[in-house]
Length: 356
Length: 264
Image (cartoon, rainbow over all chains, first blue to last red):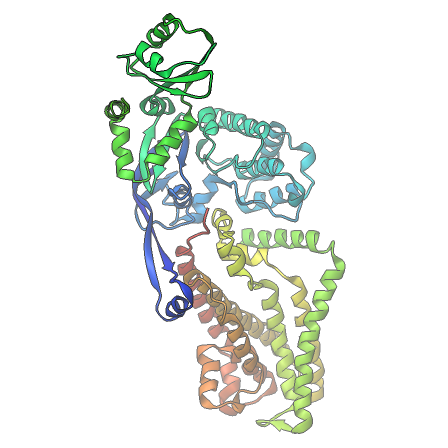
């Protein structure tokens, strides 16, 4: 069964235009002008039950807007949504019983009262029976080691402690879908890892479907079997992370440290015909960029065989961060980006021909 | 129904836990509330130093109306403390959290902002009413007690409906700053004898913004003021209450659909 089914989803906002200066402000007073902004442009995707799906994109790409439509907070302008078999904004009160929501930037807990009291209040709101609540709370508290935090008021918790409490709060009613909007924002690496492990376990043991947005690609690498990438309100990629990497990463870089000042021209001559490019980093080091098509051993053999004294060699694979950064940068005109993702290979070649 | 009642109890408990730790704060709020109402009362007394009657209403009667007005007003203030709604729920986006919980959204907001000190205003009002009741030498029957409850409920519904509608403006407009204070002024007119105003204002206060139904109209039932059919009109208080509340909630529900969330 599909946990989330979205068809041609669209959301438009009217944003008031503020004209410049005092005279502009006066004009605005009497006659307002609006800009229509389409935050989400006819997207479609399906997420089966039990999947962990990462939802990424630049700031303002429409991630939060989508999540808010999926959780029933916003009413879509057009399109169809089915989450857990409900149309979220229509039967909201029934629908939200089956989902958990964590917004990293906003607290779900009551600021002034003890954590445990917030949980008790949520128990009432979600109508969880006392014994079930106890069992679940004990399990979650043990998993996230919250024991001694439970009696403290939320405002006295650190961000990491608070975020762990937020997770517990969103899971108390045993939801089948969990929405996380930047759950690891601002957290240190220890807490991040803890939260990732925890989410993995929840997913494995309870079959909870998880949809998370994040800017930290490590979250995605650790958790997600699938990534949906959004740019300017459109989906530009939907698939596995490995595939994204192999389709987008252009090649590897090899850093050489030489015994003496290398001559780039000599190096270029050595590797002539391979399709690699060189750049000088500083006096003793140079970097060779080689596309996937080129064999590493071939290139290395040529350089080593060329007689230059080499002190050190380092091979660097383009990491996800860089890949995604590149997609964001080139993806500002989104149709172009989509095209690019389709014909990465072709474009790759063009780019390198351009380099040479 | 049981569910909503138990939620109310739970929120009250939490209010007690957080706020009663600052006991001084609690009593200062009670005191300032009562002082504020007391000043209004003094204003009435001063007016009557200069004139024996106001549109045919004696001092004791006007004070009686004021006392009655304070009862629903205190109840309303306890539950509809929504002055910072736009700021807190729309601008800061806390409405997001409300909307992801399985209980009626307006009810959750009402409970989160509950303000029990206001209820002391009702008690104060009841005391004023009892004093002027005996001053006026009115008879007291069991039916009066029942009607008092019915009128209070009706009046609270009128207030709740009007302010729900007004608060819902935040969903439609970016900064509805001016309207609430304006309303605040208009509602004050409802506690004085309605026949001292001209026709337009009377019509406005009776049918458009029925603030007369939270003060002078129901109070006149007890005072037996038959002029202009006030006593009969009083019996419609609960009906007007239901109509206004339904309109208010409709506007609210429609507004929630237009909620657009804060950025991020």
